[in-house]
Amino acid sequence: MGPNTQSMIFTLYGDYIMRYGSKIWIGSLIRLLKEFGHTEQNVRVSVSRMVKQGWLQSERQGNRSYYFLTSRGKKRMEEAANRIFKLKPNKWDQKWRLLMYTIPEDKRQIRDELRKELLWSGFGSFSNGCWISPNNLEEEVKLLIQKYDIADYVDFFSAEYIGPHNHEELIEKSWSLTEIEGRYEEFMNQYSKQYIVHQSAISNEEMSDAECFVERTNLVHEYRKFLFFDPGLPQELLPPMWSGNHAALLFQQYYKLLEAPSYRFFEEIFHADN
Image (cartoon, rainbow, N blue to C red; front, side, top):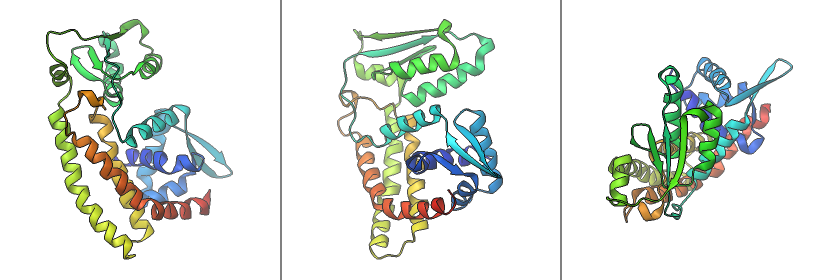
C-alpha cells in the first residue's frame, strides 16, 4: 500500500473534482480509481490518511460519506495547477531568498517534513540548514512557519549574491540540473511516442472515453512529479535549450488531446452519484 493511491487521489482532485465543487462521494472515488487497479480497501485507507494529514474533510449525508478538500488542500492544488500549466519560466528580480533554520533534535520529525515542503516549493539545499531560491517564496515560507510553528528557529532573508562565484555555480551547489534535465528527456522519450499513437487512435475513434481518462490522469500524475524535482528557476538562470520548456509544450498538447473524452467519462460517473 504505497503512496500511489494517495497521490492518484490528489491528481483526481486537482484535475477533475475541484472543477465540480470539490466534493465527491467515496463510492464514486472508488469507482474512478478502479480504472487504475486500486482496490476499495486502498482507497478507503488513503482517504482516511488524507483526512488525518489535513488535506481532506468528510461529511455524511444519510449513510453516505462525501469528501472535500480542506482550505489547505485547495491552496496546495491551486499552487500545483499554476505551476503545472505554466508554459514559460518567470522573469528574475535578481534577488535570492535564503531560509536558515536550526531545529532542535527533539523536533526531528518537523525538520524532515519541512525539508519535503521546501523541496516542493522549489528551494534548494545550499548547505546544512540553509536553503535558497531565486523565486519570491515569501508567502510559502510564512505559511510553513505557521504550519509547523517554528518561528523561534527560523530566519528568512532576501539578498543579492555578490560573489566570488557566478550564479551557475551557486545553482550547481543547490540543484543538479543535469539530473533534472535527464528526467525531462525520459519523459519526452516516452510521451512523445505515446502522443503520436494516441493522436491517431483518437482521430480513428479507436479509444474509449475510459481509456482517455486513464491515459490523461497518468500523464498528469507523471508530469506532476516534476514539482518535486524542478525548482522552477527563472529563465535567466536556466541553460539556453532547457528540456523543461520542451516537456511543458508536449504536456500541454497531449493534455488537450485527451481532455474532452476524459471529462465525459468523469462526468458520467460523477453525475450518476453526486
